[in-house]
Structures are given as C-alpha cells and as structure tokens.
Amino acid sequence: MVFKQAMVSLFFAVLLLCSCENDLRDVERIANIDAEEPIDVSYGVTVIYSDSALVKAKLISSKMIKHNIDSPFYEFPKDVLLIFYDKDKKEERRVTSDYGLYFEKKDLVELRHHVVVTMADGTIFRSEELFWDNTKRIFYNTLPLTVTRPNGDAIEGNFFEADESFKNRKIDGARGVYKTKEGEGP
Figure 1 (tube, one colour):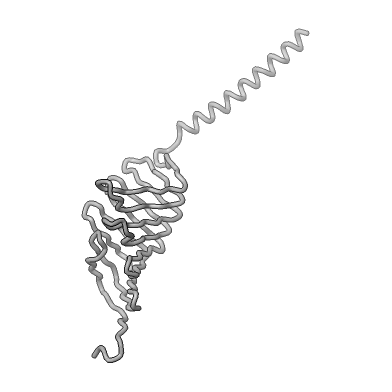
Figure 2: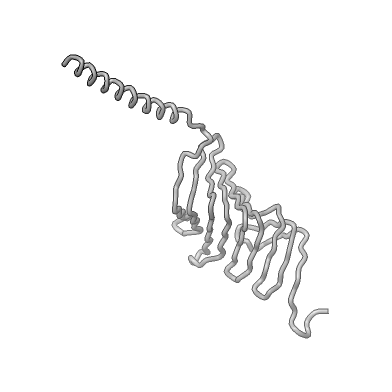
C-alpha cells in the first residue's frame, strides 16, 4: 500500500514538473520576443480617414501588421486599396498595390509592386512605387511610370511628383504617344 501511494505521489510530482517546465518554456519564449517582431496582426482591415466629419479616404487590406520598434510602422504585406473622396463624397481616385508601409514618425506612406492609380476621369498611372508625404502633402515616386489617358494618349516618365489632389503633376523625362484626330497635328 505504501509503495502504491509512493508511486501515485511520484506520478503527480513528475506530472507537475513537466507542466511547470512547459510553462517555464512559454514564459521564456514570451520574454525573449524581439522588439522588432510584430505586436499586432489584423485581418480584413478597413480604415476610414475623415476630417471635420467628412470622409476623405478609405484603406482596405486583407492583412495589417503593426511593428513595435523605436520608429513604429504598419505593414500591409498582401494588398492595399486606397479610395479617395471629394467633398461631395464622390470617388476621386483609387490606388492599388501589392504591398504597403506606413511610417508613423515620418508620416509617410510607401506603396510597392504593381501600383495603379485610377482617376475618376479614367486616367491611369502605373509604376512599381508611390510615396505619399503627408507633411509636404505630395505624392511622388523615383521609378519609371506610365500615364494612360482615356483617349489613348500614353506618357512615360522617369519619375514624378503631384499635389494631394493628383492634378498638378510634374513628370521628369516625359515622352509619349498622342493620338490626333484626322486633320489635326503638324
């Protein structure tokens, strides 16, 4: 009988030690999480940006990761859709990309890979990158771009800069193909 009680006590002691060991491993793993690892992962994200109760933009992404480092940033590793609205709540432009970043301290948005800006009038901008500097209130890029107008005109450039309305644009090294109607031109 004493042997049986000793075996049961030993069994519970071993069980207790094993569970403590797992708990200690979990505590050690959590304690060793690097500050550069994401601290928040969200799926199916929709963010509305408004100013004075007017919706100005909407961001939609299937995944958002917030990184907790000295300069925190948000990462959108799969897809980004930004929709900008005018004062009458009509869509002004739509921006899509395969990857995006938002740097809090710099107040800078960086979009990469298959960036497409579609304007309400049908004009389409394509590039592999697009930046939004919220401090300067400008869009810009540093890689080649193509602008296609609804009438078929196509302009290529080395890089560009545009105001926040995306209407006043400066394209460096602009070259293109312009369609003319019969009887127009040189």
